[in-house]
Image 1 (spheres, one colour):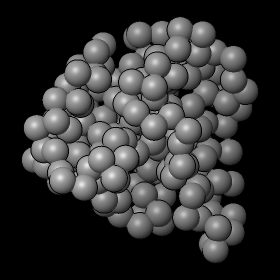
Image 2: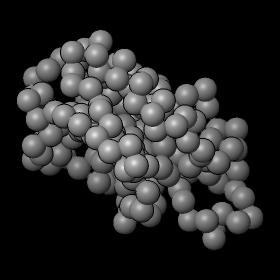
Image 3: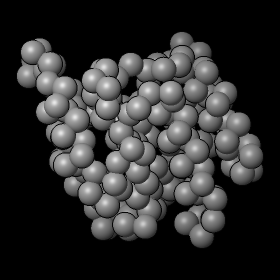
Amino acid sequence: MSILKFVQNNKRHHLYEMYTYLADPLKTTIDSFIGFNVNPANPIPEMELVQNYHHYPSWDYYHKTYQQIILSFDNFITKDNPYIRAVCTEVGFILRGNDQRQIFASIHFNGTNNIHCHYMLNYIGIMGNLYRQSYSIHHYQILINNVLSKYNFPLIKIKDLENTSNHLHT
């Protein structure tokens, strides 16, 4: 079963807090980091630079510095699978869309039943635009299932069409 989840209310409010969780050496290794428009070895200064450059007057009230998205693989997929990074990278490009958005991704494979990839999207784009989900959940499902299918991974299937706003699962 593959799952895609857009996390709405994360207890980690700031980029550094989320990065610390995503880069935890008990869960991952530095060679499992992926960066889109950002250095994956040190993404926070670059993301903060963009946020500080495009400071909005209501930014302090808004308090949203990133959007977290998780792609979780079926439990039969092991860390020895050579395609995990390729799938996570291709899905990152889908999540970035046509937007010049900075994304830091980390694959967690230690201490979990299901290998999964966390994506931390900078809430402010390089051009100053706030994050807006590019596609409907169903459209993301189609795009990501094309990637999963290409690598023979289990697809994301909608179990309950009324309960798809936060995640998709089989």
